[in-house]
Image 1 (cartoon, rainbow over the protein chains, first blue to last red):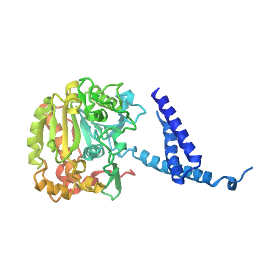
Image 2 (image 1 turned 30 degrees about the horizontal axis):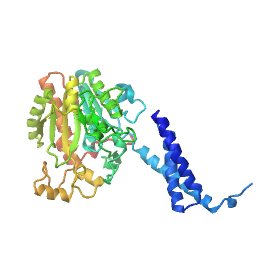
Image 3 (image 1 turned 180 degrees about the vertical axis):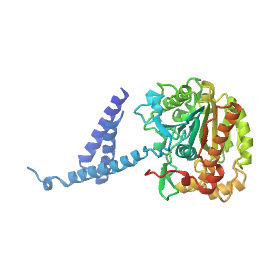
Image 4 (image 1 turned 90 degrees about the horizontal axis):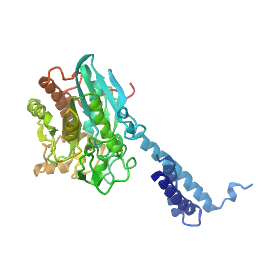
Length: 48
Length: 381
């Protein structure tokens, strides 16, 4: 159950990071969003 | 069909940032997983098993760790040497590795766990600038790299910490972070948190293999009064006392500290109480663990030299002798090896035929003279 909740939370945060990455904004914000997005998705996929 | 030129500039930057992020994550991930590789070369006559054989709850987890078994052809006693309960205390792990790679057991059985908390070796404590590894040079000139880790189980592997840690089975309340401290988790339980499952595995190994003598190798801060000492369960009091006297002749001063009965979770207390083993815990002094050090580096791990500690020693603030030579690794590993060999010898004197007969292990003088790396095997072998 905790894993499912964790993945849901990661999904929401990854969605926000993805939106930040591809919406109009500063380049620094996009770079930060990319650095948050990738480890977040990997962690959500690999968590046991 | 659109060409890359049709993609808006801002999207192109986003995709580029994504590619860079993937590259950085892969490099960081590989570096992280490199921390989990074995750093023991199995010696002649040693075989490898895992702690999960004694605690199935560890199977496939980062808490599972290697157990090395060195068995003689003649019957004798059974001894367990534990290193790496705290992965930021490297002299214990190195002494255990040295046993696996050099000892030849003639009679009895020797079990060695060089990295009792394998998870703790996969991270270092934050905000201290600790190195993640240090190198030793072998006799042939090749380099052996050893991990320097943290005191506690990696929070990536055991999370979250409770508000208050309740030790099992005593029910004693302890600090929240100690839920990830293997030396507060003994005797452990099979269905507990990861650290408790590791402790349970070690307790089960002692019970199933009928281990008679257990020595847990640690290091401590030079400003901590519990340093350069042996902490003993009451069943091991005679061995500890006699060893302290014997070691004086070798130039090793070993303080005696009885295991407190009202502080739970530590190996010298719980392994003695919950099994028949004679439990002892050794502490050497390691400056990088203390608060007073200057720059944290692999060099400080190895030579223990630090100007701040020299000043502290002059001011009488240290509980160990400290001079221009610092506290080198060969001295610390030598103390561990000399003490555990003395415990084994004296156990045999008190219980005839129950010592582990072994040779090939360098003594304190040889280690101090030639260094630890000189006696280790080459990685490639």
